[in-house]
Structure formats: C-alpha cells, structure tokens
Image (cartoon, helix red, strand yellow):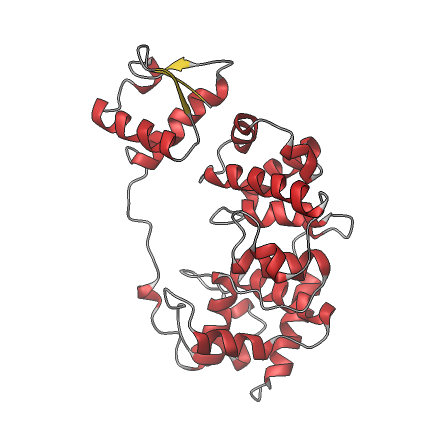
Length: 295
C-alpha cells in the first residue's frame, strides 16, 4: 500500500475512531462541560476502568460546580476513593469554587480563562475546549504524542518534555473544522490508549501501520519503554493511601499512630507521611496529644 498523505492518515484515524471508540459517559452529547472537565482531571495518570464508576458517582452527587463548591473539602477527598493522587480532588473543588465566584458557575471556553482556573494546565484546557465545546485546539497527551512520534517520525516513545517543534507539527496535523479537529484529537488519544501502546503495541491492528514510519523502520526501541519496577507495597505513596483510606472510613478524628491497621508501618515513615498529608492540605491534625487526624 502506498504511503498516505498527512490528511489521509488523520482521516484514517478519525474513521477508525468512529467505529472503535469506547462508549464512555463523558463522551455523551448530553455530558456537560463540567462533566468533561471532571473526567479530564480524574483521567490524569489513572486508567479509564477505575475512573468510570467514580466519575458517575461524582457527577450524580455534584452535577454542577456550585454543588461541589458548597461541599466540605473532606467530602470531596472521601468521594475520590482510591483513584490516587488525591490532591486532584482538592484542585477540582478549588476549581468549582473559582467557577462559581468568577464565571457564574459555568465552565468557560477560552484558553486564558480555563488556564486561570486552579489545577488546569495546558493539556486540560485544550481537552475541555475540544471535547466539551467542539473548539479547534491541539490536545497533546502521552498517547497522542506517541502515535504522532511513531507514525510520522519513527520515534518509539515521546521525549520527557514537549518541544516546540513537536507541538508545531502536532498542530499542523489538526484538521481545520472544529468537529473534525475534536474527532482527530479523541481518535489519536484512543489509538494510543488501545492499540499504539507504550510496551505492547498491536501494530497488526493499527489503521496507521501501512504508513507508519516506525513500523517501516522495524519498530525499534521498545526496550526503552518504561517498566514498572518500583515496588508499590511499603512506599510512602502507598502508606499515604492507607492513611487516607482509614480516615475516609471514619466518622470523625482517628488516632493514627499505633492504629492496628498501620502497625506494620515504621514510625518514622508514618510520621513522614502524616506530615506530608498535612502539608498538602489533605488531612488535619485535630489533637496533637492524641495524634488524632481527620480529613
């Protein structure tokens, strides 16, 4: 098969997405811009399968920014459950408060206004504009960068940091029409998540394989793909999660030091994790004498 043009390759991804896109609630036409924003924050470094049930519960409980803004922070952190990186729950609540205070409780659609919201960076702002409002924008997450890097440049994996030439080339691929651009952004993201994965790409199932520069080069460099070599059990992040799980399940302050569920954690590590949770604003020291903490 002859090498396809950029336009044809983009069109192939859009066509593939139309047939293979997962049925996700935040992709529904009925989903509000707030629902899209919540999904984008939850999906940061977290798989769809874990986000889906939490997103549904979250949106049922707090369907508008005003609903979340009126809720105590502890409830937002508690509802975040085990999604990981719980500071995102705090940022979402701070974002909801800002939306109520500065935007009459509505999600804005301009890049400048979105970037001014707490916790909203370049990627999230572009994703909200594209997927909530159908605006023409460049949505570049790791999946999209990997698809473009392999198919157009024979790069096995994206560089650690986004470069200006990389961004400029990605922007040149985005179709002019708003709807087409949104479909390309979502399609490239989906292709990277499901087919053109980091460690086990399914090139035989990839719509871009006939024109992929990386496939043509022999698909080199997979040995550079990141490996999950760090043990999870016993890390500070795991201990922080256990402390938060304990406090989420409690109806009031809990004496954490010496608690039976944490007796296998070294005192020094537990103190360090508690201090970091307090610094991050996720928990509050209620009684120093008793070592009691609460969300």
